[in-house]
Image 1 (cartoon, rainbow, N blue to C red):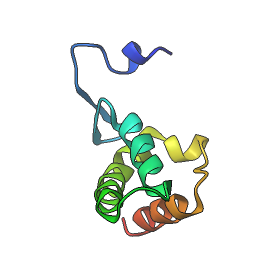
Image 2: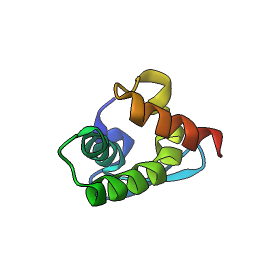
Image 3: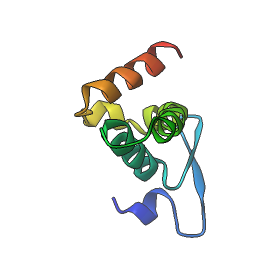
Image 4: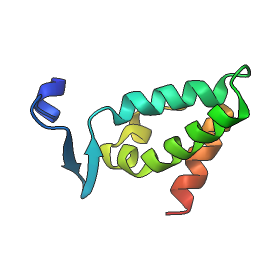
Length: 87
């Protein structure tokens, strides 16, 4: 399957397992993961990335991302596990 078959170019979001998922959600998760795992990132940058990452968890769960990929960073893995448990 190609990306445009999941979400055509003219659409910015789609419904997956009853959850609205915006185009770019997976890329944003990766970017936020990098900030949280970066020892040189400021506390403010980490706090923003943490909030954004937590908000993306329901969409990523709806896509099935956590069923097929393992998060490398133990800290981010714990954040995601906590967000999933609190749902």
